[in-house]
Length: 115
Length: 112
Image 1 (cartoon, each protein chain N blue to C red):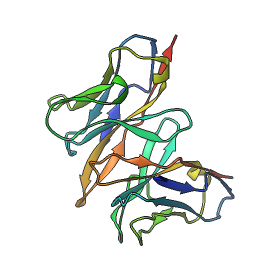
Image 2 (image 1 turned 90 degrees about the vertical axis):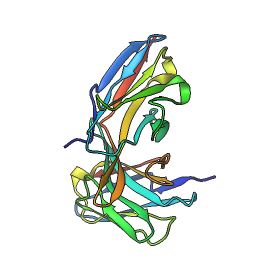
Image 3 (image 1 turned 45 degrees about the vertical axis):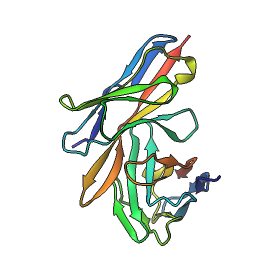
Image 4 (image 1 turned 30 degrees about the vertical axis):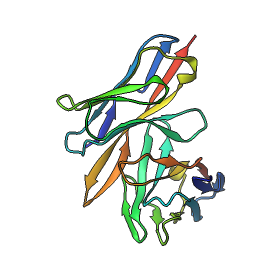
């Protein structure tokens, strides 16, 4: 079973519009959740993470995400996007299996911000 | 301030050849992992390690081998290269599975 599902493979938006990138996770995994961003021709970098505590998590570059246990979701939001936010965004979850934890990524969502 | 260093950055192999992708980190991280990135497939975990001497399989381990003799190094070996292994490979490390993953710059491998 897929541990993490990103529902949209591509999201086009206009500059200064709000955006939401959706992520759902399997309820059988540990609830350590992450969003990473990959700019063109670069490696990935951490945007934000949820380990415990407040369900609203704020990250870098004005992004935030809300952990919703009942809906098993961890959607990423930004109220007003910039051209420079054009990148691929990956949701990731930690999975406990066989006595050790590992980090598993979704398939990614390509965000394109148009002028 | 090197972080995670991967070599080589580019490699072309013929089917059946073998090679090793090197990965080294200088942050004293216990957790290290290898991912492959393919269009539309996201990052898929190949192998990972929670410390020296300990390795485990990820989602797509077939055709790959790893070892972790030191905390710093985590090489990935392709045993008999196949065209299906054409991909971009990323090595990553973190203090633990809940910590921030630091990625290398990636290694682009083409198998002809």
